[in-house]
Amino acid sequence: MDIEYLLEYGMLNYSNHYISDTKYINISSLMLTLNALRKVKYVEEYNINNTTCQTFPLKESTMNYYQTKGVCKHPIVVTDDNHCLDGRHRVAFHKQNNVFTLPAYVVPRSYVNKFIESV
Image 1 (cartoon, rainbow, N blue to C red):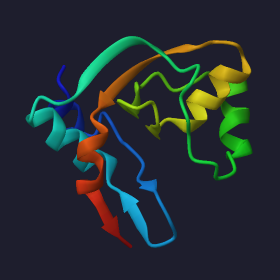
Image 2 (cartoon, one colour; image 1 turned 120 degrees about the horizontal axis):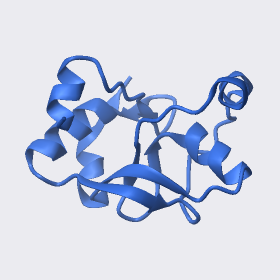
Image 3 (spheres, helix red, strand yellow; image 1 turned 90 degrees about the vertical axis):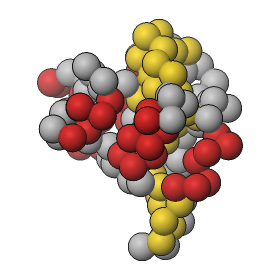
């Protein structure tokens, strides 16, 4: 299935990527638009060893859920310069458990700033 279908029917839900208290990136909009422009690359086993993420505190409840129920299987969203836009809990959980590959959608960093919105 393609990204457009998954987004339209609610099968892929992305959280917003907050840059500050007043600015964020709408990841669903970013994915839909960049997919239409054929700028999204899917990587089945993306190496997360050097992937950076937001430093906001990780939700302990999410990490505990992953530990007991399993981890979300949706691909993470990363920029081509290795920054995680969606899936930071999955990245942290896998790194803590010495698993360094995840399925990922890779988007060009040069397009990301076009999707910054204000709260």
